Amino acid sequence: MSSPLFSVAIIGGGPAGTGPLVRAACRGLLPLLLESGIAVIEAGHELAVGSLKRYGVNADSFGTSFLESVEEASSLFRSTACAQATLQLGSYRTSHPPLHLVAAFLKCLGGDLLTSIRDSRHSQCFLGYTAESIRYLTDGSVEVCIRRTRGRERRTIRSRSVVLALGGHQSSTVATRTALRLGLSLDSLDKCSLIPSDRALSLAGRPQLLRRLDASSSPRVVILGGSHSAFSAAWMLTDSGVAFETGAISILHCGRIRIFYGSRSDAANDRYADFTDREVCPTTRRRHRFGGLRGDGRELWRRVTGRSTVDETRVHIQPVDSCSSPDLARLLADATVVIPAFGYLPRTIPIFDSRMMPLVIRAEMGERLVDGQGRVMLLDGTALPNVFALGLATGLRPGSDLGGEPSFDGQVNGVWLYQHGFGDIILQSILGLIDEANCANEHASVQRT
Ligand SMILES: Cc1cc2nc3c(=O)[nH]c(=O)nc-3n(C[C@H](O)[C@H](O)[C@H](O)COP(=O)(O)OP(=O)(O)OC[C@H]3O[C@@H](n4cnc5c(N)ncnc54)[C@H](O)[C@@H]3O)c2cc1C
Image (cartoon, rainbow, N blue to C red; front, side, top):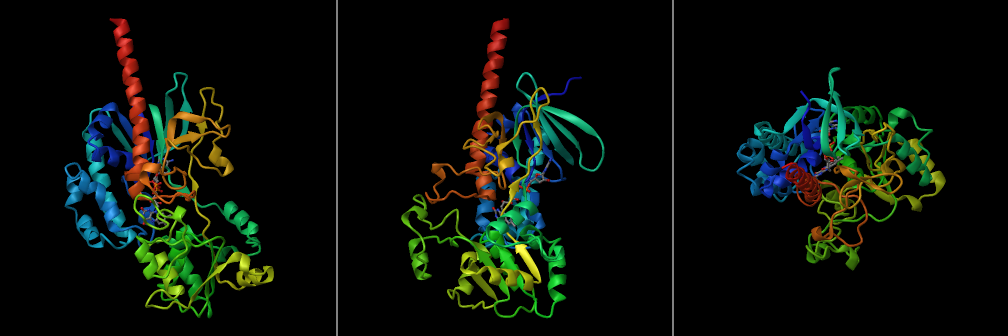
């Protein structure tokens, strides 16, 4: 029996991979999508949760941003709507819920999606399968090679298009090179003192970090970078019970630290004026809407800069270019732990053409993985017509309909975006291809009759 031809194979069933499905549910299009035949391939055993369950920190987004889609499509997300985690999340609508609660909520959402997929005639979910590679076939469709995540069984899936949503990872090579560009050499450091932010923020890495700090009579930490991860790591340390002295946690950053404010008056009340007109979202009037620090990281910055009722003297925020080379070398040499927080790279899998020649994607050179329509870009600048990607570090840009500060050219990631603007971009692309295939089929059957 020949294997079915799916209309789309979604590889990675985390918050990003499930985003277009959630978007489709909100727009009443999920039945149509499922009827067209989708395959979801997820290495783990649950949908929608992804990596968020790994982190022991609070969300940087409000609880309401997670709840919105379930409330929009409550008839489809019936179990989620009345789950305990959803009710608990409801008490964090305008505050920042712990990520373990967000993960529990997403697990329910993933359960509802899984039920819809299993109830459909043409769609299928491959839980516990890891995708290894993608190959174009001569007719332009794609073959995805998958194997059991824990086991040897291998199989292939055929589909007309693919959505890659594999999440991101931190690279030690990128950390070393970025540090060097800032005049810092990480090579001479004891390997055990180097703990990347992703590990420091994770439930699994935290004990290692705290053990190392507890073993020192005067623990000192250097955090490299000015991102959310850098400030979240500092917040987590100040809240860890470790006895840090004044100035013992240094955040060394380059460029400006941008802070999110909901309105002009919020910013003015906090004595914050570090924004130009191009850093104000024309739709919402928020300051640094996409690029600004939020949540605990933002509160830490407020405490350190004397804007909060709580003073934080243990943390010191310093632009890297204000330090001399000997001072930087001394800071690193004295540190019990150094935490590089230089962002993420997109996870990918090999893609081959129909002759099994590897296709080199642009992201391998450190550039954005996708173009504005979410299509994966090759090194030569062409976009693959039917291979899309979204999620952490893929570099999908918000369209002008989403607003945001005009000056923003960084990366923006978030569950709300996957389930709204970004989900829509991918959904439109997939639906366009499904329409094309239906037209071609109709045309072929007219020709036959
Ligand atoms: C520390 C941290 C905190 C964050 N906090 C927030 C927040 O508060 N709010 C917010 O909205 N966003 C937050 N984000 C951003 C973003 O929403 C999350 O990173 C989110 O987990 C990204 O979703 P994803 O699907 O791209 O990746 P992941 O969550 O990593 O999911 C990828 C999925 O793909 C699967 N997979 C990977 N490789 C394969 C393969 N080869 N085959 C099959 N399956 C595979 C994995 O098992 C996983 O389920 C945070 C990010 C970080 C790093």
